[in-house]
Amino acid sequence: MNNIIPEFSIVIPVYNEQENIPELYKRLTEVMDKLCASRKLSADYYEIIMVDDGSTDDSWNIIKNLHHNDRRVKGINFSRNFGHHIAITAGLDYVKGRTVILMDGDLQDPPEEIPKLYERFQEGFDLVYGIRQKRNDSLFKILTSKLFWWILRKFSGVEMPKDQTMLRILSKRLVESVRQMRESARFVHGIMAWVGFNSTNVEIRHNPRNKGKSKYNLPKMFKLAFHAVTSFSAIPLKLASYLGFMSSFLSFMIGLYFLYKKLFLNIPVPGYASIIVSVFFVGGIQLLVLGIMGEYIGRTYHEVQHRPLYIIKESFFEE
Ligand code: UDP
Ligand code: MG
Image (cartoon, rainbow, N blue to C red; front, side, top):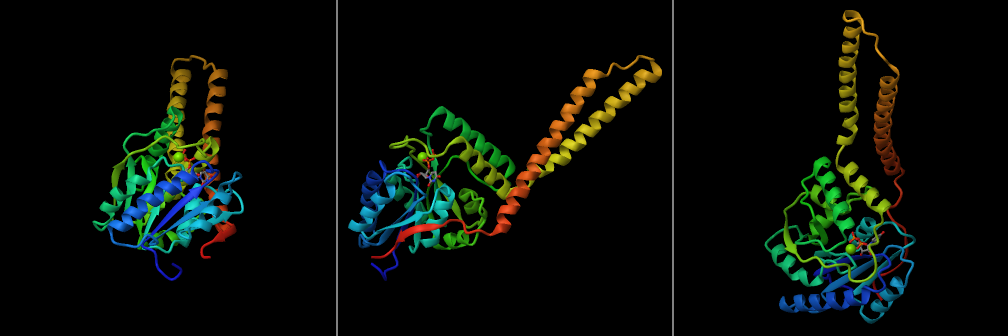
């Protein structure tokens, strides 16, 4: 297998998924063996790259054992938790296959849907991703995800259909383009949309998480949303000019009104409440805008540091 270029590489980010990996391996290999057989390819014509994103449970040992029994399984172990989208990036950096399949490790997107995506992919697309027919998640997850996609589609300036799954098939040339993008604040759905090529989507089933809890907490979700928006758009920065313009216009009009009252009607202007309210209002806007600018500056700072995106503690690719 060493010298053979596999037809398929499957990349799976894994963070504390010890209960899911065995079932994932079983179902995925069944699907892939069948897919290879149907194309008259030998069953070792694919590789599975599991990227352990600094798990604290037994995930890495399980991956190691899988590799021990089945050399098609390869593994990368990070020195700490770097995040879902970075783990995917590492996997893409090491794939050898001509066709790359990406999927999460929690079986929410069933591997049994891969042949459906692949059928479409063979029509000549560079990217085929799943769209969830019906999201099988908690109400909180559904609402926050809705908000996330809404903000993204509104502010990112990149055409991105909502409810995309991570389960997707990519061509080698698309993967090579994605590899060239080394920004540390990563949002891979956006990067894949940004590079272009021909993409399409297919509706697929979405299951509840197989075992365990979501590995995304609220701060992680906010971070991703912010990375996603700031990666593709500077619209939030323009908010400053809009708000500045609006509040100056408003205060000018109110000023005129008070002047008129004082000069022509001789009504004294009672001031305290209105002054306090407007001071807080303007102060709030200033802080908001400063905060947004700070986020962009922080992002610029991180990018110019040019640190590696991830640190690998251990990996096995061949014997
Ligand atoms: N994941 C990861 N690093 C993280 C968080 C998650 O590699 O810091 C992996 C996780 O193991 C899973 C995938 O990314 O395979 C998606 O995570 P999860 O299912 O928790 O996200 P959700 O489906 O709830 O959005
Ligand atoms: Mg999940």
